[in-house]
Amino acid sequence: MTEEELRQQAVEVLDANWERDHTVPSRALYPHQWSWDSAFVAVGMALHRPERAWRDLRSLFAAQWYDGRVPHIVFDPDVSERDYFPGPAFWDAPASPGRLGGLTTGIVQPPVHPVAARDIYLRCLDRDAARRELEWLYPRLVKQQTYLFEGRDVAGDGLASIVHPWESGLDNSPAWDSALAAVPVDLSLLRSHRRQDTQVSVHSHRPTDTDYARYITIAASYRDGGYLDEGLLEHHPFLVECPAFNSILALAELALADIAEVIGADAAPHRDRAEHVTKVLVDRLYDARTGMFHARDVRTGQLSAARCVSGLIPLVLPGLPGAQRSSLLDMARSAAFGLGGEVPLPSYDRTAPDFDRLRYWRGPVWINVNWLIWQGLRAHGHDREAADLRAAMLGVIRRGGCHEYFDPVDGAGIGAASFSWTAALALDLMA
Ligand code: 9WN
Image 1: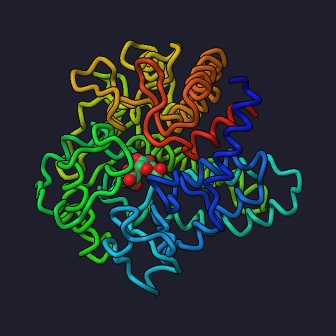
Image 2: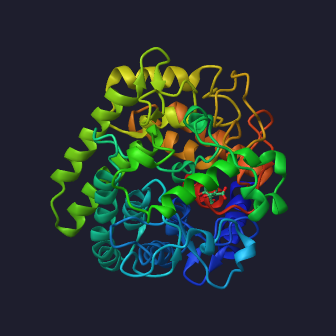
């Protein structure tokens, strides 16, 4: 497939996944609006349908809660409860004054949205119209950051904690295994709630039933506590500081600084916060023994030993100190991740005994995290390796189509076909 044919296919995927005022990640598997998906999708749509890119972000932020959190899913009321589990009835999110509108979950995802908003602006020919969009979004984006910095600083160290693996967007990553081991497994929960994902996707590619039983227990704990963040350390079963989530939090501040400059707001506090988070990330989540970043279980204080792609994402930060930058590059180039090869970086260390080439975030290649690493390589001036990674990403997409993820051994497309962020980021890579 030529680049032009891929461009055409990617546009068709995004058009087919457009629904009224948002893009669904995949018609079959994910029929609602997801938070960080909308941000990645907006980056790609900015090129050919900027009005939809803004609309996607606007519809997501129309469902922002009063406390600033942006829900990880905004449910489409026209989609049956049976078509995605857990649906709105399970989440039972509080009505006003808890949230502004829409049926939503009560958990969040990484705040990629400021990066998307800045990128759409830069690509829009009608700068006045784009500035008005930024003026609408900016206070809402800031409110999301404030929620994460204040409501979610569970450890009191300046990093945001996730309260559920789904909040990372890297659902069954081995990064959570040690923290999840403390969460009881009640498989009877899966008898009362039917998993829908395994009806439309291959079961052996998806998180296991044990994972799902824990996901339900953790989500129910947060829900039953009224989605309140006070006192989480005393009673919530899963609290983790994720290096990818916090890198994106810092990156969001840098994008907000750029946006602030466009709309005449003060950029300096955003740059200061980005610098501070970068410093705390290094102090708290970097392990000099492995030369990469690891997730911290806030309940025990322990760093996970797993070497996951999330531990390389701090590379996206331009202010990362030289020592960490070069050790992350060494790790990315090593046999564990294989930067420079034909296939992009896997989600988990290829040399680990439990590396699983098919199971979701436990081995497969995902385009969104590779796109972040590509941004990092460029930010640090590694243009040749950035070009190689770009070629590897476009190579697997051209051969396999806009799949959700790819086999890290042979590059075959797996997971949902016609997946929105793969299509959108392919468009961005070819821009
Ligand atoms: C749970 C939509 C989402 C992505 C996540 C990905 C997957 C959901 C699921 O799909 O998670 O949020 O049902 O597996 O892990 O990153 O946002 O594409």
